Structure formats: C-alpha cells, structure tokens
Amino acid sequence: MTGGGAEPGRYVLTVGESMGLLRQRDPGRLATQRTLGFGFGGAESNVAIGLARLGAPVVWCGRLGDDGVGELIARELRAEGVTPRVTTDPDAPTGLMLKERPTSGTSRVVYYRRHGAGSRLAPSDVPAGLVERAALVHLTGITPALSDSAAQTVDAVIDRAREAGVTVALDLNYRSALWPREEAARHLTRLLGRVDIVFAGDDEAAIVLGDAPPEELARGLRALGPAEAIIKLGARGCHANDGEHALSVAAVPIAAVDTVGAGDAFVAGYLADWLAGAPLSERLATAVTAGAFACLTEGDWEGLPRRRDFALLHAADPVQR
Image (cartoon, rainbow, N blue to C red; front, side, top):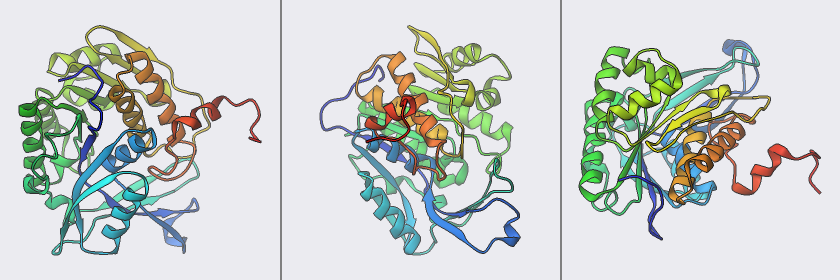
C-alpha cells in the first residue's frame, strides 16, 4: 500500500538497532584526546526521533542490553516523544560506536556491535499487532546485515505488513563494514521486490543497478518493485519518482558542521509529510530542509528540526527576539 495519508491514531513503526555513541569532541588524533561526549544513535531511532519532532506518532522497536546504555536509549526515546518497544537482553550488551574527528571537516565511525544486543534481534521481539496497527513500517538495509536472526526479523516484519496492507519503506543504508557489495546487492534486490517506498544514495542505488544518473536510478529502483523511489544526493539535493511525477529538488545551502544523520533526517521529513498526505513536492521540500538542519549541529539526531524551526534557515536576522 502506498500513496500517503494515515488514519487518525495510527503510527509509523521503525525496527532496528540503536547503540551508545562515544563522540570525539575536538578534532585531531584520538590517541591524544582525553574527553569524549556520550549519547546514542542508530538509523531507525534517528528516523523515529525525526518523525516525532515533526509531529508524527512513532514507535521504535528493538533489542537493548540490560545495562546503563540500553536504559539511556529507552529514556531518551521516550523524552523525544517516541514510544520504545524494547526487548531487554540479559546476555548481550548494548552495542557501541565511536565517532572520531581526524580533522575539523571529517569524521570516521567505528562500530562495536558484533556481539551486541541489536545483532540478536529476532522475529519474536516484534509484538503481535505492532506491525498490523501501523500506518507505515520503516526499515533499513543495516538490520539484515547484522545477523541471520536480524535478517529473519526484517523478512517477518515485511511479511506481516504485506498481509495487513501496511506500507513498507526501506532505506538501503549500505554499510561496507557489515557485508560486501555483491552480497548486499543480492539481499537488497530481493527486499526491493517487497517494499513500497525506497530511499537510496546514488552510490547505494548503484550497488543494485550500476552507475547511472539519478533519474535512471529512480526508474530502475521502481522497476524492481517499489512504487516510490527517492535518490538522496547530499549537497546536490535529491530526485524522486512516484510513478506519476519525477521531480528533482535542490539542497538547502548551508555551512555543514557534521553530516552524519542527514540521510536519516531526510527520510524522517519525507515520511512525516507522506503520513500527512502531502504531495511529492512538499514531501521532498520537507526532506531536504530536515536534512539541512541535521548538518548544522554535531550528533546523529540532536539537530533534527521541529516544523516551527524551518523558518530559521531563511531568517534575515540571526537573532530572534
């Protein structure tokens, strides 16, 4: 099912992994740093927070360790207006990621997740009725790369959504540290035949289709199954094809501070307006605006906007009185 809009009271469901985040505060060699910031992140929880800040009801479902990091993630999600549906794993810790800043303009993320709780996600962690009552389910290509049980969970969620007539969105979100391109191409191609909306960077779409202009990539992704294909182009904006319209939108010009999480913000903006039944042009405008905001501060989700914030990007006076 696709086309936008949702019945009152229905929510977006995101399913996936969230981890603690150690963040290098100052640029330079990590070996010389003595102070690190601490928070959390994860593609699906980032999208969930972005949706909540834009006024959409949203549920995040995942597995966390029985530890302080897991407790922090669940508390922060609730504080952001997201409903967490958590399976607490007493036998595995919540995963961690480390964001290094080799220079002021670059970052490198290292993951410590192989034996973490998120990699043990199982179909039984998604309660009965949770998928079936949703207006939309959002998944990423990260989760099936984590483990066999996580991949089975993605398949089971999609099966349940399709049986219930619930729209499924997929962000390809390729991570080279998790699986090689050839394996990713096989798995993602199979998933594309079973979802309704797909998001991909042009480099990610090329894993499945080969190198091509954004317009061809969007058409190629739609040919594999999804009704809507959105190509994320970073500072070059985006291109989308929903079968009725093909539309390119420029990025909002900004001086980026940290681009990590911008793609998740883009997805949240698009899906929030999809949920509201907005036309494609409005969905894309909100998406690029949300993506721009994510780049203006450090952190995976901290800079995600509320709708009242949108005007700040175009304010003539930088001081609001």
